[in-house]
Length: 202
Image 1 (cartoon, one colour):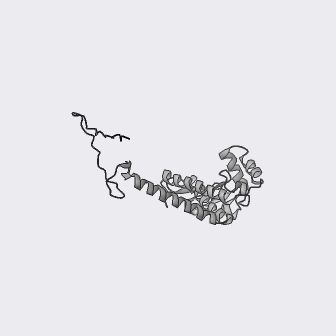
Image 2 (cartoon, one colour):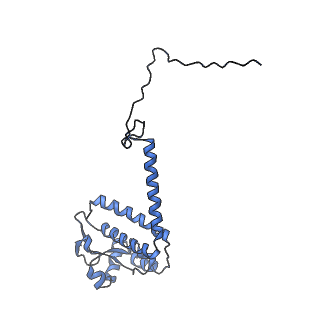
Image 3 (cartoon, helix red, strand yellow):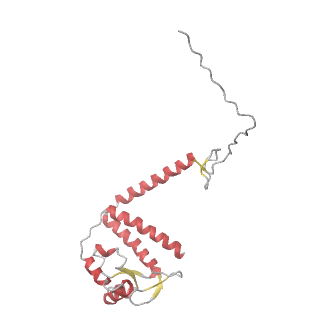
C-alpha cells in the first residue's frame, strides 16, 4: 500500500499586518511574568486560585470551630455580639448612647442592652423591638423599668408593639447550633457596617 504523505503548511503572517504584542505583566504576589487574572490587584490566575483556596479553607475551619461549640456557649457569644449591635444602633457619632427608659446619656461602652421581656424567653431574646440600651439603674436596679419600657416601645415602633412582644415571648423557640452560628455571622456583619457608618472603633 502506498503511504500518503502528510504535508504541513506553515502559515506565514501576511505582509503589511503588524503582529500583536503581548504585554508582559508581573504578578504582584509571585513576581512572575504572567497575564493578569485580577487586573485591579495585579494578580496572575495561579495566585488568584491560591488566594481563593486559602480563603475557602479558612472559612471551612471557622465553621468547624463554631460547630464544636455547644448551644449554650454559642448563645453566650451571640448575647455579647447582639449587645454591641443594639448599643451601636442607638449610639450617636460622638459615641454617646441614651438610656431608652430614663434618658440618661452615657458612653456606649458604659451602657447595657436592656430587654423588655426577659432574656429567658428565647423567641424575643434577640428581637430588635425587645431590646434597647439601658443604664445600670433601669436595667438592674429597676429590673428593666418595664412599664416605662413598654410605653417607650409603643411611642417608637407604634401602638401595640409592647403587647406584641409579650405575646411573642410566650412562644416556645429553640435554637440549634447552626441557627446560632448563622445569627452570629449576620450580627457580626451588621456591627461591622455600623462601626464604619458611624466611625466608632473604640
